Structure formats: structure tokens, C-alpha cells
Amino acid sequence: MKQTIFEIVGVWIVGVCACLAAPEPAILPLPSEWTVETVFEHPQQITLTFGGESEPRRFWYTILTLVNKSGGDVDFYPKCELMTDTFEIIPAGRGVRPQVFEQIKLRHQLKYPFLEDLERTSSKILQGQDNTKDIVVIWHDFDAGARNIKLFISGLSNETAAIEHPVAKDASGRAKKVYLRKTLELSYSIGGDPVFRSEARTIYKGKRWIMR
Image 1 (cartoon, rainbow, N blue to C red):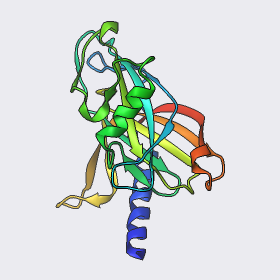
Image 2: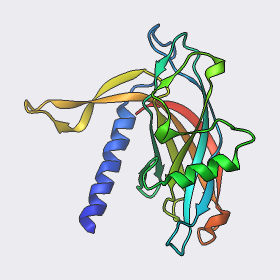
Image 3: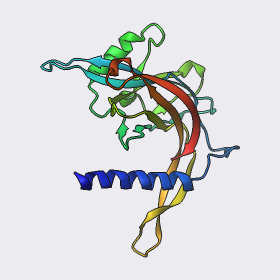
Image 4: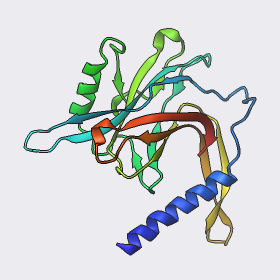
């Protein structure tokens, strides 16, 4: 158990060091670089009870509206993670059954009639307003003791950068390269008593673009 905790903390520290050393996204991107226009809903929760289970499961999700104004179709290979201040990192889609998306789609069918699941959306975002994509990103429930979370959403831009890893070395003893992608970071605090999880609410603290 202690070893697992140390491993998690180690990963967290390395991640923090990488973030501190990372370059900022370009203020003026190169002509070949693009970033899709992104609008987001603040995280909401939903609970479902699956067949054969007596206790409901809780999930959190955000909805992204993406518009590609780059002048051409672009590749879309997203990576979305939820990180808590209790050293928990949850990849989107892990442990999420298709029924969760169906219930979210039903809940938002008036505003988002063509809502897509991140796990099943196409790997292209076509050019133009007429090809706007509404995508839901879903995570399983996180530690009830967490008081702050961050959402990291990459794949919205093709801007990349490389930095030296703060710890890992290659065969020649040189620092390994870490390749970073321009990533949208959304920050929230969690309000409400952790005992009453259904009443927990997210409080928006801000957004920024980072290299991660």
C-alpha cells in the first residue's frame, strides 16, 4: 500500500516539474498550427444503477462544442483527464458504460440534439460552422475528499513542444525528451459537504491553455 502511495506521489511530482518547466503555448501560432474554437459546459454529475447492482454509480461530465475555423479539415485525437488535489488522475471513459452516454444525451436532447460520445466520435473535425461538434466527456466519480479538480483536454490543437524529462535518462545518460501538446485546462473547486455527494457542486475558477 505504501509503495502504491509513493508511486502515485512520484508521478504527481514529475508531472508538476514538467509543468513548471514547460513552454507556454505560442501567442502567435505558426501558419501550419491550428486550435479549434472551444466552448464548454461546467461539469455536472449523473447517477445510474446498472442491472444486477443495488447501489447507483456516480459519473461527472462536461460538454464541449467545437468549431473548426482553421481553413481545412483537422485530425482529432483527444486525451482528457480529470485530476484532483488528492493525487488522483482519471482518464475520460474509464469504467463508463454506454448507458451513461445515452442518459446524458437524453437529458440534453433539446440543446444538443446531435450530441456525440468522446469515445466514439470521428477522428476528424470538418471545416466550418456547419460542422460544429457537440461532444460529451465522461469520468467516473472521484475521491469525495477532493476539494479542487482540474480538467485537461488535449487534441484541440496541433501545437506541440518538447522538453527534457526532469528524471528519466536515455541509454547515453542524457535527459529523455517529453513531447507536450497544447491543452485546455479548466479549474474548479468542489462545494458542499462530502457526506452529501449528490449535492456537491463545482465552482468555476478559470481556464488557461498550457503545454502538457
